[in-house]
Image (tube, rainbow, N blue to C red):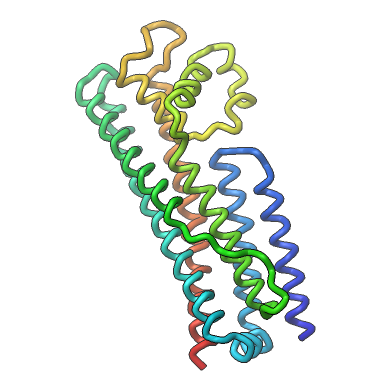
Length: 274
């Protein structure tokens, strides 16, 4: 069992790295991307672990129907949540791209432009609702280690739990704040020239999706007056470009993770089918 013990130790090491990133109080695409990268490393570790003959033997011999069902249900749940997030990001990216196209052709006061902005905001509301629903219906998973449970099973259950935790962070990030006052707080920060000068410091932990939502809502609602302190259409265009690029980066990370989730599920199905 020496190889299994070494693999579990490596798993714990990668798990500590991931949990360390979760303690950082940051709500931005960069922090989400970092978590996804470390989560991929953790899943790669488990992939290799499941290829060990001793691991397969331990799972086949020590897992009763209860553990088999829990592990397979857990892997299926991860695939479902990952799919929900991917669909939400794709929808947001497509709307972002359409909005950028019309902004390049139209002026800020054009009714077609305003209509496209409202379309984007409506789409974001639908996405937020889907994300919040996904958070509500998520099954709670017992993550307490049980000494009577095989070590291999404990490790796989902990992997499920930490993956769901990262997915929750991403779901919450996409859903954004439910408070209108907090959204307008983004606007007040972003329209002040003095603060824009040090934007890297003030907005480092800003939820980029909320920033764009608030700016577009400000334009549609005509809250910004024509002065040097208003949010300009040109500024929003830049934020939308950055947003699309960031979403693309997260999508690529999720795609890599999805492939690993599928590999893990296939490995489990093969092991338990013997």
